[in-house]
Image (cartoon, rainbow, N blue to C red; front, top):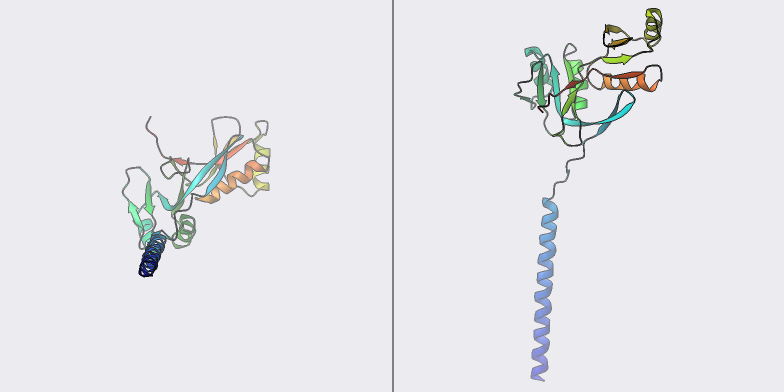
Length: 215
């Protein structure tokens, strides 16, 4: 009888210890879950553009914006709209990069800056690969179009007028190649895509700013 009671007590004791270990493990697992980031970084959003007849993909960096032809008024406007933004020290001529604080989307920032500083030229930064280490691109404004080489000046003007487009200049890199005026930022990408998809032009692509790559 004594041995049976002893064995019963040992069994109960082991069960209690086991439950304690199990409870501790569950608590530790819960603590680990709480330490995980609530908002892990989302993959970069992608856009399409057309390099002639070839469809290309680019990826948006929502945390980075670029200011073209930067000056003190542009910097003041940026900091007025986004006091926590950080101007990135960069040696590239004619541009100033801005690192936006967490929770700010570069697309929204550019739209807001247009109203704060209409004279400024701002664009979100895009990359040639899904990683933010990919070569950078940005959109200073304007679109380059290749029109029907058989059109004369009258036909070119009629086409531009029908679409309410302003021709900035004719490029001497081929027959009927023109620069069409657009605002900076995604507006120029959207305009270029719409023109190419219309089927009325041979080619249409944004007037890209591209990061120089050392080879």
